[in-house]
Every structure is written in structure tokens, then in C-alpha cells.
Image (cartoon, rainbow, N blue to C red; front, side, top):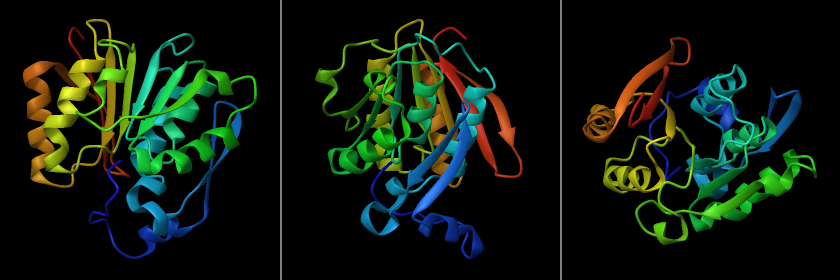
Length: 213
């Protein structure tokens, strides 16, 4: 996630973002995610899109055991943590400034025998791609990373670099702005994009993206 705020429904809905801990139950584990809005803003809280993507993974969206996965814009790391608990060797990424916070959540929520399969690593979209092999991952995960128009070209370039013909991208997002649809149109010029789920209560979409879906 980018380290800046954006508009969200005001009032009661925002109170959960200012709680120091957010508790979830996935993959037969209780996960307690530390939040700190004052420190990193949107990168340090759990958005509905992350929880929905975790539920989708847990329900068997794909076989994760042994599947090489990466989470982009991980923020608190919830999605990457759940992917690791479900058996994937996972690289959990964000910008450098967010890494220590991200690492603390990953270490606090993964049992010792699973921690070696979860790597926290810097990835600034479109910039330090040389430290990642082209087509390195089977599964690319992103929760609520589509909202800053100025990041779209770099995000698309990053997806193209990380993907191979076998790769699947799962993106969850709320369509907040018209330019969010513009990014989906950009994706469709390079990939096959299909909407696989919509949660009307949370107003969150799940898109499955790949070269040959």
C-alpha cells in the first residue's frame, strides 16, 4: 500500500483503523495484526479487501502448498501471513519505510516452523525489479493496491515483470474512483481479467488476472 491516506467512509467505519490490534481467524490460527495509523497511515491498518482475499484463499481459490507467492503493497502483511499458513512459500513486500512494521506482524503471527517460508522484502513498484527474477512467482496477491493513479504504470510494469505464462494474479479492491476502472482497462490490454467475486456488503471486488485464464 502507498504510505498516504485516501478518502474513506467517515464515522464509525474508521474507528477500527485506530485500534492497536485487529484480530482474525484464518487457516486454523488466530492472527493478531498490530495497527498504527499514526505511524504509516493506510499501510498500517487492515482494509476489508485484505480480509476478503484471505477468505477467498482459505476457501480454496487455488492450491497454495508449494506455490511460490508474492504479496505486493503488503502493509500489515495479513494476506501474506495467511498464504504462508496455507502452505505457500511467500515473499511479502512493501516500500522500505514500511518493512520493519511489516516484519513485526509476520514474525508475531507465524509459528517457528513456518517462518522460514515467509520472506519480507523491499519492493517499490517499477524501481528495484532487478532483485526479482522475471516470472518468478506462481501467484501474485494484491489487496487494495489500486487507488493512486500515479502508481498505475509502475504497478503494471511490476506485474508484467513478476508474471510468467503460468502465473495467476489475484487483486481485491473497492472501486472508489473512476481512475480505478482505468487501471483495470490497462490490465486488460496485457492480461485476461475476470471478476470472480463481489462482496456487496463490503463493496469489494476480487479479480483474477493472467495470460491464459
